[in-house]
Each structure stands twice: as C-alpha cells, then as structure tokens.
Image: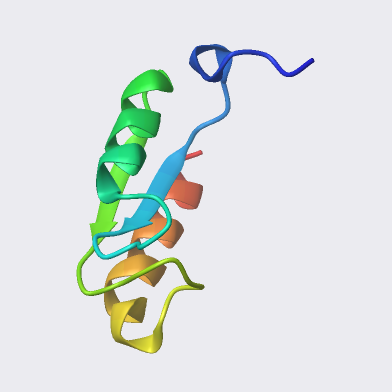
Length: 70
C-alpha cells in the first residue's frame, strides 16, 4: 500500500496544465499543497499532455532550477 501523499519527502515540483480536461488545475494545486515543501507551476494554455513546445521556455528553467537546488 502506498504511503499518503503528505509523507512524500522527495523534493517535488508539480507541473499542471490550466486547461487539463481530465484533471482540472485545482487538482494540481491540491496535490502540491499536500506534499510538504512542494512547488507548483501552472502551465497556461496546456492540457493533459507532455509539455508542449510553447511551454518549454517556462518548464525547462523550472526543472533545471528545481533539480539544481536538490
């Protein structure tokens, strides 16, 4: 059985599209709020997909910054 999300200790960056038709962006906010110290990055004009090219200028620096600090 998996541990509750609130027990995650790994540095976490939650990336979520604001136009996700499967899981509304509020789910991403809620997930980040439950993980201690998690950071949240909303991706405007993005759905439930691998990060589209129009988000690379935002997503790539966020991931690099997050991984460099941890």
